[in-house]
Length: 351
Image (spheres, rainbow, N blue to C red):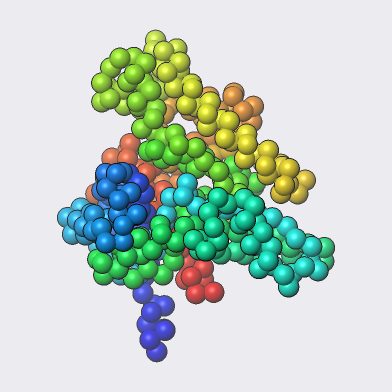
């Protein structure tokens, strides 16, 4: 009886990152937003909270978000928590089908070889996504226990009940998959401080990578290069961007080093996928999402730089806010990951 009641509870999404916390409740059958909100965080204070289980900063800010900054209602206390993809490790590998009984050993070998954290300090999960007579294809995800435990503790201190923890890129994959992105796709999620990169095969994240560059980096680059205030640099970034105009050359010069570093990481991920995972299919497109993607012309820049189709995707329009006040247009992309967390279905949780 308790189990059925537990299943009947709705799900809310909670996205915790180094720079902010976001929450959202969605009716996934109608894509109707029931409630949402966000709150900026001090990165240094967040790190202290993650490192010290007795620190209350994260819990206090989360309580403030729910009590003072929520638009609408959550309607549940069951939460799916998203953690920064840059702090997690996802890999896809294959083993011979005859070795299926020794899959746990194969997981340990992958962790020992490719993850710079001891297995004892990680939560590790995996799923067999393909299985034929010759081999098994396995997706493995690992995340530091300390990070997960801190997020769980903060949620519990504000009377939320965590039911799932997942990397944010998986939540974004869920949104893109629902938008019929069914070809082999490279997702580039540009956040405030980091860019996460993932190979997405339908709803399965095959591989992740990342680099410590984000939308805030672009603003700082412009401010320094043009000797202007951060506020003015942000306006130039979101209004002018890389599109043709009298300031295109100087803005492009300012942003190009950081944009190129993202290109370098994208190429590394593609090369690794082709060398280790490639199944004769090629990555057919790159999609850019996230709060740092609001630079006009950024899709065209990467199309030319990478010589393959790149487009900025905004799955936001599929959400119905009903009578709720919507966030301002420039802030909408930041909610993509928490929308994906909130739209997880019961089958993914209770299977």
